[in-house]
Image (cartoon, rainbow, N blue to C red):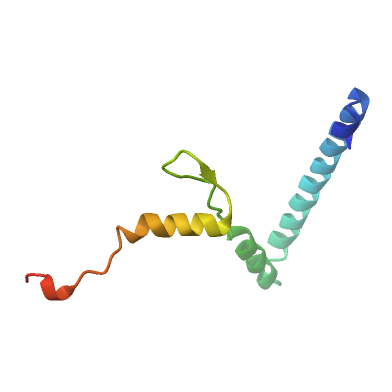
Amino acid sequence: MAKMSGKPEDLANFTEQQKITNKAVRGEKMRYEAKLSKNMKEDSKSLFRYVKRKKIVKTKVGPLKIQTGEFIIGNKEMADELNRYFENIFTKEHTIYLIY
């Protein structure tokens, strides 16, 4: 909203509110983690659930730059391009022609 209005006072207000919110979130997170570590002996299940949730890493692929210099963004297009790239590397060889 502040970017749309273009008013400097709106941007300053937004920035100030963002700082306050981020500080509050960090504080609550610290309090929650302290509570988990304090109650670890009685309620270890909650601690391990929290740790498991935090260690999940979501990686994304793309955008990909193809040989023509263009970038492709769509999931299907990226999958097709990766398939084309790797099909040359991982081809099935006819074992009949291999010399042992």
